[in-house]
Length: 121
Image (cartoon, rainbow, N blue to C red; front, side, top):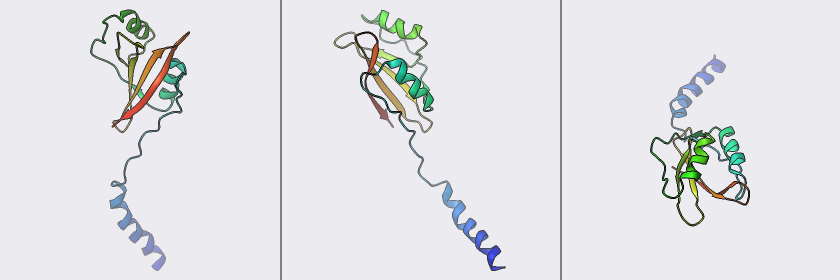
């Protein structure tokens, strides 16, 4: 009888606390500065992040060919491109806990490369 009661008592005291455990943040894949964006994007998607589907028109001031290039590749996660300087473009992905993974991409010598990335809660 004692053996049967212990699992029941343990379950009664454990179950109410299961829902209060903090959620684990979604992991960010091992990105590297200077890696091709296409490679970084695949790592991000493989890690379970979802590309945003930008419903607003991206900034095309002086950058229409750059934005069109990414949209033509099916990169719906493009948010904006700077019209000056390094011509960085911002891409966003959504995590399963509501986080946003932002990736900025600049133009490399032969391809578009990752410049920085960060998670916004």
